[in-house]
Structure formats: structure tokens, C-alpha cells
Image (cartoon, rainbow, N blue to C red; front, side, top):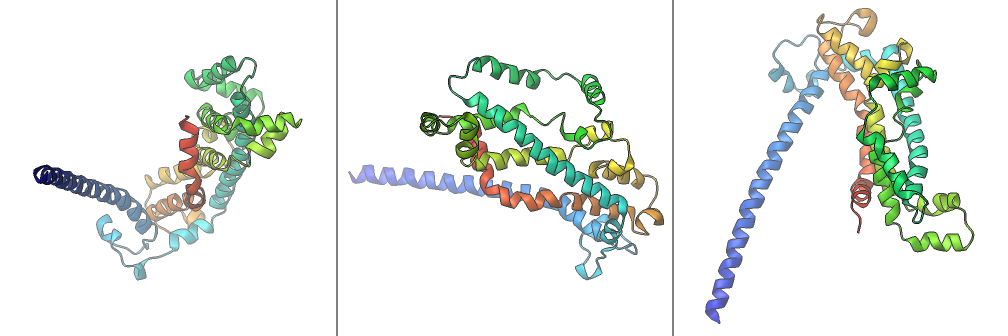
Length: 302
């Protein structure tokens, strides 16, 4: 018996030693990954606060002490009407786009989740067709122009307001809600729209937050639709403005005084990139607690 116990304890020690080695390797890998992520982020932040009088290479600029930083680039951006206007346009696209996408996606996903729906299998395949076969850029452009959406902010989010991927995830979440709740409401005579509004939606906060985040990131970073359909300067969102600043950085060292003052173009570019990420950085901590639950519940059934 003692021999068996000593053998079992030695195996346990070996497993414990193997776990320690594995966790050590994992910790090293995570630290290296974190460093790889943090270095470009810190470089961008340090560059955005770099004064115009700075002389040195990029590595020296990353270790510039905070008391030598300058907010010249941020002051130039916030004092520029073009940047403020682009930021407001992006906010409009974000708010109206997410609201429109959720209003359209929720009823489609709920309809596809109803048991016994006539033609449910056909409807699911019909919704999947656009996901598997993209119509292409030219037909999409013709549809948008024929609808008169050119030079309207709606042209950025309305053509892609319903994502098949997001719709399927939300459908799976709705299917995971107990049918007993829906059947009880139907027995009491509640119509489907009332079941959706008073039962399904209050229980679906995680998936609504998750899908809203997916749509929000997509609309906030959308460059292609804005470039195709928004031809007026007063309608350009942040991605277009960032592209123009990037192009300007290859032409001269300083932005013209009429645009952003005497701030270095590199600092202007870094500051605009950092400020464009602020809305997503602010929103994510509030949505994070719903993110994992909503994604897993919407992706895995049973």
C-alpha cells in the first residue's frame, strides 16, 4: 500500500511540476504579447505629445519625460473645425447606425427563432445567401445611388444595416430562452410583438450589448462606404479625415497654419488616431461584462 501511495504521490508531483512549467511558459508568452501590444500604443501616445521643438529619433521620443510633453497637437485638432465636424459626423453614423441595425436585426432574429414558423428552414437559408454570395461593389453602388442616398450619412450604415453573422448569433441567443416563457404569454393572448418587447428584449441585454458593439465598431471604422458615397467635405467622417492627414504627412513636415497651426504633422497624425479611438475605449468597459456572456450564449447551443 505504501508503495502504491508513494508512486501516486510521485505522479502527482510530476503533474504539478509539468503544470508549473506550462504556466510559466504561458505567463512568458502573455508578457511578450502584452509588450508587443503596448509598445506601438505607447509610441503613438508619446508621439502625439511630442513638442515641435523636439530633436531626436523615435526611440528617444518614446522616453521623453512628461514635463517636456506638449498638447500642441491636441489643441490644434480641437481648434480645427474640420476635425470637430468629422468627429460629429462619425458620432452621427455611430448612433443612428447602431440604432437602425438593432431595430432591423432584432425582429429578423426573433422571427427566425420561433419554433413552428412556416418556412423557417427556407427563411434561414434565404438569410444566409447574402453572407455566402457577395453581390459585389458595382451592384451595391448602383442601388445606393438609385435610392438617392449619395451625400447622405445614411449611405454609410443603411446598406450594411443587417449583418447575417450578427443576426445568426442573436437568433441562437433567442432560441436559448425557455419556450415556456413564450408559450405562457401566448396562452394569455399576447401577440408576438408584445412577447418580443416585454419578454425577449429585457432578457437579451448581453446579446444586444454585444451585437451593438459589433455594429458600432464596424460603423465607426467604415472607410469604404464613406469614400464612395460622401463627396462633400462637410460630410466626411473621421476615417476619411485620418486618411487625408496621412497623405499630408508624406508631403510636408508641418501642416499649414490655416489647417492645424504649426504642430508637427507626425504629432497631429498620432493625436488624431488616439482621439478617434476614444469613443470605443470609453464604451468597451461598460459592455465588457456582457461581451463574453452574449458571445458564448449566441454561438453555442445545448
